[in-house]
Length: 224
Ligand SMILES: NC(=O)CC[C@H](N)C(=O)O
View 1 (cartoon, helix red, strand yellow):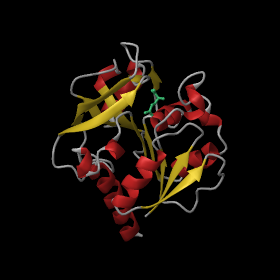
View 2 (cartoon, helix red, strand yellow):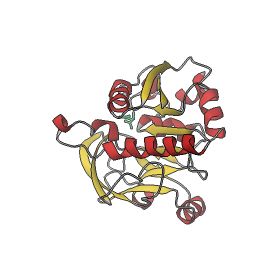
View 3 (tube, helix red, strand yellow):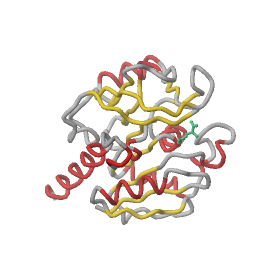
View 4 (spheres, protein in one colour):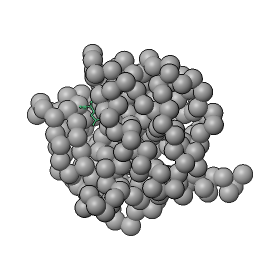
């Protein structure tokens, strides 16, 4: 499966994501934020980091990068679009995911490993997990997810909340750590599964995340 990893000026998790995807049998390519055509890719990944220096607000400038029209097109075409950490912030700023990421409730950057609860085990992002509680690294200053209560109720009813924090580290509403759009093909999470794919790091709980996506894409190709 061909995967694009978009690199914005200031991205710093693009190569981690590239290696995670390569190790887990995707065919990844790192693609510049100047790219205007993503039609060759089966899945699009927006990595973590500090795009455009996090100026104004994390993701607020990146959403205007030339590549974002192609990301919106991919999302509209039903392709898998995944944003991790800063990538999640960019997708909310672009309006491709509901809500907004604010500064952590306790101001400051948190670098830690936290427990996540898998709310929905039957999604494109979780179907390869056997456990409902996993440990995944976090590294953010603006991970405090907010969405208004009417939208939250719709998201809950539509099973759009995929991961929740077992012990909320940043003040996110409803302990939300990862969500999808209504259609389920656009996904964002603050924790970093790409930092938990290699046994040498002591944690491989991120592997099933990527395996789930690959499995889902392979089944979709099989159906064509
Ligand atoms: N690791 C990251 O992607 C950091 C995201 C963002 N710049 C923040 O601090 O919230």
